[in-house]
Length: 308
Length: 253
Ligand SMILES: Nc1ncnc2c1ncn2[C@@H]1O[C@H](COP(=O)(O)OP(=O)(O)OP(=O)(O)O)[C@@H](O)[C@H]1O
Ligand SMILES: [Mg+2]
Image (cartoon, rainbow over all chains, first blue to last red; front, side):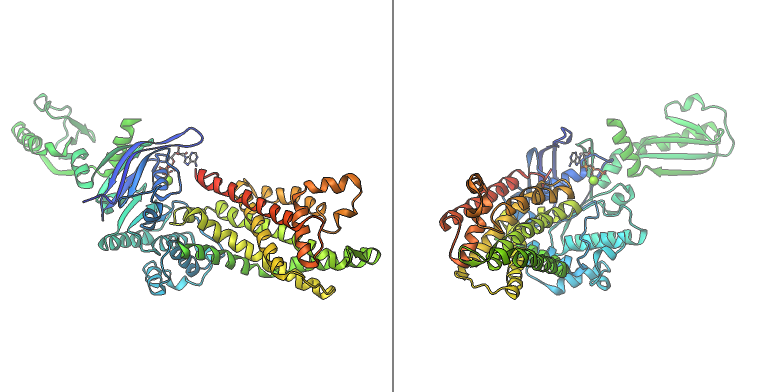
């Protein structure tokens, strides 16, 4: 299937000379939730800005549903909704006025029923006649989402939708994203909360210093790069690791009462049973054991720090 | 053509004007009345007639133009500067609207407001002195085109400005003096020798002169020259705006 967004060799150098994107290639699949991760200043907002027409690419090309974003900008942009990272809102407009404006701006015919649906889905219906400046930050964030959804986009960009947002709104937002996906909308989100990507995303891209270092299915990424840790709580503390266990990279923690074995997830079959057999042979007993799969956060930190 | 997009911007801007309707109209009305008291009453009683027109009536077209210049510059520059300043411009830039459509929305709304203010001033002036309009259709054409040209100019200012101070810079420093020296309150024939010739280098002279012609049928310079000057100014502004959008100057990084 043709990707809904196809980015090729995209480069951006700002007027300051700073190279914010370096030859980025990325295809976004239709209907997926794609999480773009990366530290501050990695180039996430720049990438989104180029696709949406706010930032000019230095070189490279972007196609949205086959439409070139420069030559065929109308068709491309009509498909996209954008929720910006910053809370850029009008002040004196009402909530209703601003979503109606957004729908009109994207060339869609007025549809009060559809807008009501959008506002209700975001718990904004009661606030529809309020001026935006009288709303709290979280409410403003909802207004921006409502504006982005007002023209029924096929692709939704959420640039750090949950930054500075309380738990309830965050959960609402996740639910909303899932509902959008059910309707076939493609969602691309950036976030600093890795558990969010872990929870939501189908695929994950990691960008650092303008370079896309990994793009992978979330499950594959976690399997491939995820480390597992086996911790054995020993019955009796030991002073040193016996030489016959040298084949396994073990560490001794908690004054010798915990033995920790860290391994790549896909090697698990080879390592663990043999280790346990060897311990049994040596008469080392343990009262409990734990395994832990490393989180995306661990993966992310190791990826990013590895490139620094 | 995304006509709904144009309409959305236009209505958004008109709603902004409606919220400040009171200030928008009261200021020009009071200013006009003051000009009448000072120029029409105090000075006009000594000058009596210029080119066969009562002085109080003679200054009306100039007064209207003065307001059109400043209102157009202020409204149009603010209209585009504000979303740049607050960041809400992102939405317009990301929407399927062309540069021409964005312009039609913003500049169209600002020009509409200017024309309305011009007409309100005319009505106010009519309370002080009865003014016949010789060529009403031409008067409206002049009014609309002048408003349009200065709104385009204002739009450019709003894109160029880096801060609120700069928004007022050009209107204060350039346009107001040129207007005062442009025959708003006198016929340039009344100026002594070098000045009347020098005045011909002031583009505003042509606009005021042409506008005055639509009222009284008399003018400082030929009407066709005025129309030509107006169109040249208009095209110049259009060209600059086209360049701004093509290069993304100060709109896109
Ligand atoms: N308008 C601009 N002019 C010059 N440099 C810019 C501009 N916008 C962004 N940059 C720089 O480009 C780099 C990438 O910025 P960008 O906003 O894309 O990062 P980001 O990944 O979104 O970061 P964050 O997580 O903090 O939002 C940064 O070094 C930033 O300073
Ligand atoms: Mg960002």
